[in-house]
Length: 181
Image (tube, rainbow, N blue to C red; front, side, top):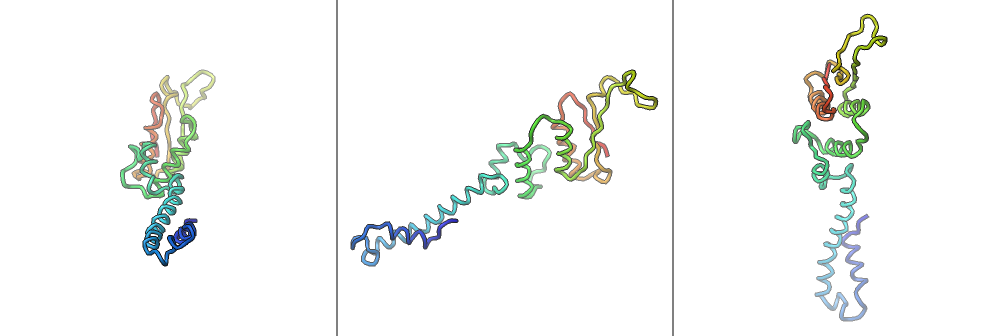
């Protein structure tokens, strides 16, 4: 808890040596110095406490642009100025806490961050003994293709466009990903 101006004025008075040379009633210049220093010390103390909030991206306000710049946010998939302060903070936290290589769980998490349930369908090349009657016969390039499916009512929404952008951006270059509805 930051000290107030009154607290600092009182502490400054107590730090002055005893005697008539520093008696605030007898020396008005010293009284003015104490009165001028107390507000500034209280302001610096308050800023020190505010800085502790800025260190954590979940509570940052003034340093949030620095966090975003460090992490490359907002990215190409975000319309500049479209996010609220809380959404910007959450984007920083999501980027800081992202772990591991892009796997199915990572792509599902992208969908959940946008409140879109995401199902991923992978394909495999047709092989004797693994294919049953009625199965599609996929060629050699199909193991590198996959479909990320979201509900049909998400078609044309900003969340779907953002998800498609992020899937295309984060998918390995040798894969082909399609957003389906």
